[in-house]
Length: 289
Image (cartoon, rainbow, N blue to C red; front, side, top):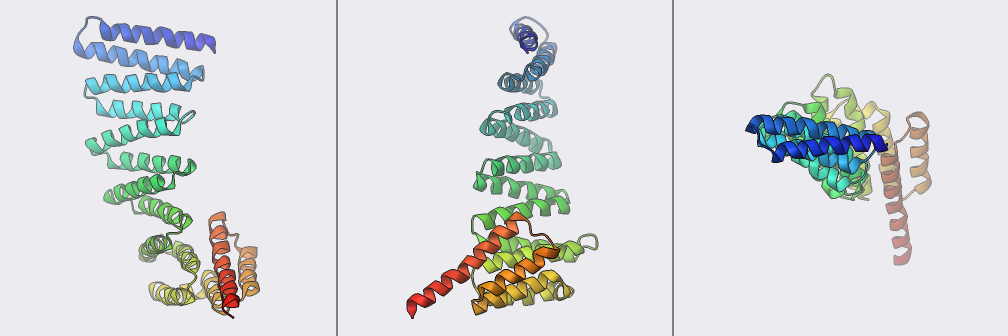
């Protein structure tokens, strides 16, 4: 490890010497960028992620002097990859620099891709508001480039996080919009039932049986095949159970569905919240009597 770091030091010193010495403008920054890149590789081998990231930032600086935006953006991405090992904040800052450069170049798919990566990073760091911001940006950029599937994946992530934050109205609206697009696309229409299930679960969390009953009518209008699915039956049974305040029936409907189609953690968490609203309503009714 020490040998790698020593070599990195050597390349870095040569790069600094290039920048402070005489030479043609282009050649000077080109040569320095190459040396900083070699230094970064050595620091990565030494697992000194901070120095590797800083060296890549210097590579980006050199390319910006040369107005080579694509190379600078790539260097910022490399810096972010190194920073991810030690600091989400610094990684996000470097990656955001890359996004801005790709936007300037009109490379919107690349900008979208890295906005999505920023959303992933902030979600893992539990900064959910920023995660939503970047997933929304990524979705908008993908949609601009006709990347409907990628855009919808980002919008689904927004809906999932919004539901975690108990913004069920936003989550439901997004999921219903996505389902509408899926129903009208022959390649995606079979995914609509899952999206509508997620939307219905968000409706259940609002604790209003009437709203879920109305939603089920809309979903049948949106997708006439939905009423014949297990997803529809689950939502209908849960809505009835909620209306009746029947917690055992609510639990049994979930158990039966889960025995055939495994519920993911997101659905399970929200269904537990929906179940809690039944208990809270029962407790309130008891207090009133």
